[in-house]
Image 1 (cartoon, rainbow, N blue to C red):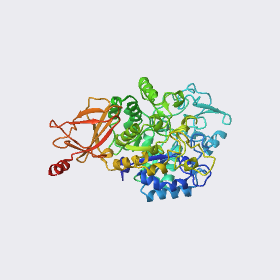
Image 2: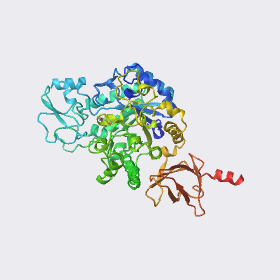
Image 3: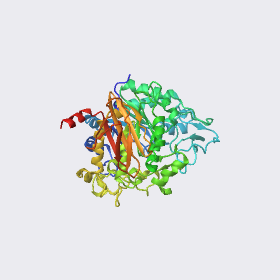
Image 4: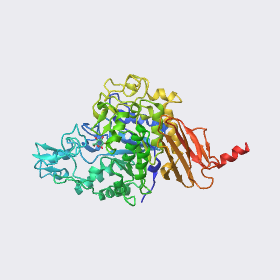
Length: 554
Ligand code: BGC
């Protein structure tokens, strides 16, 4: 039933149409602007674009409050523009994934308006109601500190309605078969318009039981199979990438034992421990989370990311570990959010230190999974902490040193473009970086190219090599008699390391450095010994016997 496993080795790039490129000069990014930037994305080497919500919305949660699932918000263009865009992407071999936000709607959605005004309406049961305020109304908020409750009184309905997120995002009653049928219809609609799948928002909440009597929601995993099956009946190679920040022992429930549920999930477990490793130079908890998330069906894949459009959620770390990350990357209260995370962009978190930024990216590109880049990170864009909550890391793309970074000709951009200081558009922009060989942009392009030439990472099995030094992470991937060995030094100081590649016969004797001329040959005891600089990384292909022979002939 699976036609193509393209997602196992894709390079995904996430962006918001509204902050990417404004073509009509009204201050808001649009599909026509994005269409003009497709060659930039193609040149960078991305193979899939994940579009954040662009459907009609009052935009009180950056589009994650949808008021019409079957339309493009007029600020971004029309359905016609959308199809022009998917067509343009397809011409360049780029797939399009879109957000599917069906845990809740906007309170301005026609379904909710009908539901609240008429108890007899067929839409009443599309939402979750209670005559009395449920006792757990002050529990389970996703945005603690900003969101006060999960049940709000509606004066028109004269009942309370449930909302896992903000009060303007009433939860859909996803157990209702009519709601499920509508979700399928929404998927079918966008598939028909050329998308290759969905980043499904808030999946544990979509499948969790909901209601005034529900103390601990239980997951209705079968729903995932229903979504997946429908999708593949319509379009064999379409996928769902699930946003599910869950513990590793439930991963297989999301993927399905035979891979019959979600094709992809974001690896939140690895993400949080990766940041801990970057903050502490201690890779042991990261190694533990890599092992814990190793089991997955052959057709499934992890989405690997550093920062996304939300806060860096550190809720799965121990209090001590979380504090280490806060101290290193977000020490001020103003940099933290929802009692669990950091709201900054990657570059400022790493103090703009190019070595550390490369290290972080090199890790993201080589850990088991498919890398997901956030727009602007390829330039090392910064954040604007004056903006509220998560908006600080959602500022417009910086294209050039023209006013407003070339994002818009309007004087009123939808969000202020970052200006002045080290991350200002005057210095940090695509046009300047294009011209400098050593820029972050050109580095990212080169590394993406190399990542594509190392399919072992997406397809292969991995093994963590034994090393005594906790600052070093050494992984070997094996696929079809090919092996690659990837090393990272998470410490600021250079390290001398000795390691065994662990391959039989001559396989691991020569390691060919894929990013420089600095190859490695095993010593007579079969082990490699090398010095790796502070925050250094090495991508090697094992088994370069031809190289040895050529050298002895020369
Ligand atoms: C998205 C958030 C959004 C929330 C509500 C999340 O999981 O990533 O940006 O606010 O869902 O839809």
